Length: 231
Image: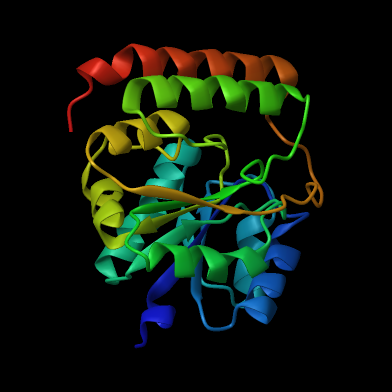
């Protein structure tokens, strides 16, 4: 296979029956050169059934593992299938497939992690997400010396070395504190500008109170816990 074909799009999906068909169909239409795997995280709706009926590439988890376990399952698949890089691509329709190729090109410059950033070009936003992202960005900069403008972006691409880390280690989740930890371990991180679309359907679990609690946990992890974390 060519280097372009050895990119895997990992699509974690939990109760995304309203979105998964449009997400996968558009991905295949826009990026037919890339492989993908839908990781159904023990959904209780028709997500897995739709994938089977449509003949999608499906990794069907029997129980709900949460985003970290679900994504790690996708990375184990990428590792065992010997992919060069893998990109996290949400099943809710917010991530746009046209940005995968620019991210891949950036990764070929020698980066370990490429983040699809909503704020890298100075986009202004007064939302809780933006405020929280700025706080996390400051914390990462303080502890690593590296500026990451959008640490909360869920659209991240990982190199083969990073795939191995996620696949073989238990203490990695697709979260800002893991990006911070990997930076401390010498990983090179870059960002490319992206636009995140509104959720296609269904309901996000990330309510304002949940989002606030998440930001606090991430800040504590980056500023304090990372100093005791072992590889």
